[in-house]
Image 1: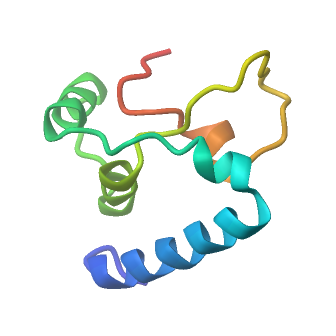
Image 2 (image 1 turned 180 degrees about the vertical axis):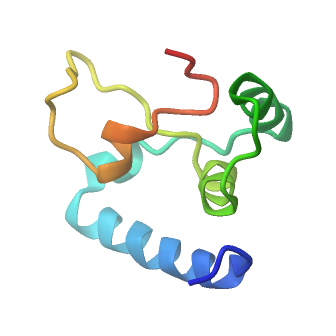
Length: 91
């Protein structure tokens, strides 16, 4: 999948989200609403460079996940839970 192929990314993400809803419904339910354009611009300004197109596309679909009560960094979950957080997360 190339950086400039949003349709391919959409298909791939749709397949993952469908799998997640069947096999990990609690994790699927924890997906947050999309990041706003303003939140994404603020993140890019803080970082000092534009986001990779696929990361931007992911944030435009779901701005990370909601934290579960008593969740720690070692709690198992989807790959992106442990490595991306959300657009407004700064630390």
